[in-house]
Structure formats: structure tokens, C-alpha cells
Image (tube, rainbow, N blue to C red; front, top):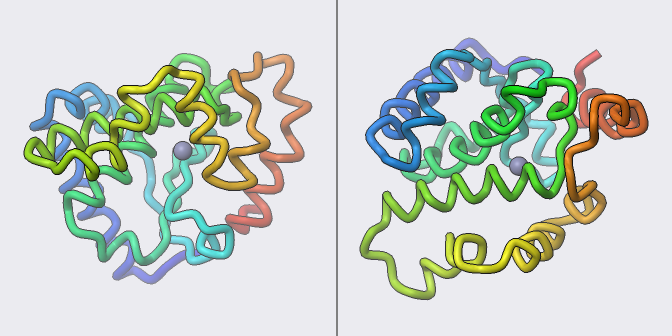
Amino acid sequence: MPGSDDDRSRARAQLQATLGLLRTLDAGREVALFVEQRRPKVTVSARLGEFGWWALTVGMLNTIFIMPSVLDLAQAEAARLYAHEFGHLLFGKDRPVECTIDSIKQEYAAESLAARVWVEMNPGAAPEEYERQAGWILDQPVEAAYQAIRQWGPYYAALPEKQPRWYQVGQYWPAVEYVLRTVLGVR
Ligand SMILES: [Zn+2]
């Protein structure tokens, strides 16, 4: 699974550049400072593509897995993508056990953060573009946005709406194990 040394250094450079950009944004400052403290690892994994994912954050491993193609994104696109992944780390910061498990609520928090970052980076966006990138989540009732997130794919359709409590984590463990082993090849 590990990428080449070249991939690793490109991923590190992209992470630093993204944190530098987010620090300059009102919507990104808090999360950038948090991530700088937490120092997650970015690991390049082509396996994600088989599942249609560009990136996946596993808080328990303090790792953000990315597709190799993420390394080629323009800086603004990368910032939006990482803002979502950083949102997962920030959401789970106080409750690492419970927040190891994803939920619609957590996806909503991560994507709202990414949408606010996008809005700040694109102040002159056309109305349709604004709607596609951010309006659908920032300007809609929470329930409507939850419904939209469920339509991202089968993984999201099956997510619990709220974070499970720590004593419920066991019942989600098969799903966590599936992601770690099948998607990421972590043994
Ligand atoms: Zn997510």
C-alpha cells in the first residue's frame, strides 16, 4: 500500500501548503491550528479509487488516506478536499472512541466546513456554482442536507445519523474493520 518516497514528500508539501492557505481564511483558521497541533499523517493509497473515494480520514490512526490523483489537484481544490477531511478530525477531537465511527452528523459537519472554506475562496461565484458547491448544505434545513448526503453513495446511505456512544462502538466494528482491511489494506 505505501506510495513512493516521492509521493510521501509531495503529500507532506501539499498538507503544509493547504494548512498555510486555510490559516488565512476565517472559515479555516480554527481547523488549521487544530490540525497543526495534531499532526496527522497523509498516506497515498490507490485502493481508495476502487470505492470511488478521493480521501478518507481514520481518526483512530490519525491518518488521512488520499488517492494519488489528489496530489495533482490545484491548491484551491485541495484546500476544499482537505478541509472536509480535517473536519472529521476536528469533530472527533474530544471523543476519540465514539468519533472513530462516522455518521451523517459528522459528514454534515465536515462538509459544512468545506463549503464555508469554498465560499470564502470564491466570493464572486455564479449563483448556480454557489448552489452546487455550498448552497445545498449551508442554506438548507439540516434534514434536507442529511438527505442529500445519504445520496452520495451506498456507504453514506447506510451511515447512522448520529454518533454512536462509546458503548455502541462494538456494533459498528465490522464496518470499521471492513474499511481498514478491505479499502486500506491495514492489517
Ligand atoms: Zn467525510
